Image (tube, rainbow, N blue to C red):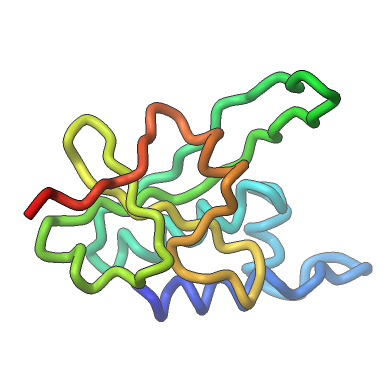
Length: 137
């Protein structure tokens, strides 16, 4: 999963060519859009590798009080995790629990994007998601 995430993150971090698509990735991103394309590409490659991945979109949020900007809607990839997988997740990753299942949210936007990390405003916009809490000992 980490290798595919890193590959897609580096792939989409290259600016588009000014004179049209250079290759199939440019054509795919032009077709799917520069915003949703990276998540669609990552989801497809993870599914091909046997992961249970799906594309989700954040819920739109209106601008808040005190002039806070509205949260934009963006695509991300949800990778389903089994309980045994949780020990291999990086410590900075924000595992989400939804309907009793664990998911790792991924957003491949930049070459240096950390695996499984979403900024707090982005995490707050995820639909029906709550952070996973460790079980009491």
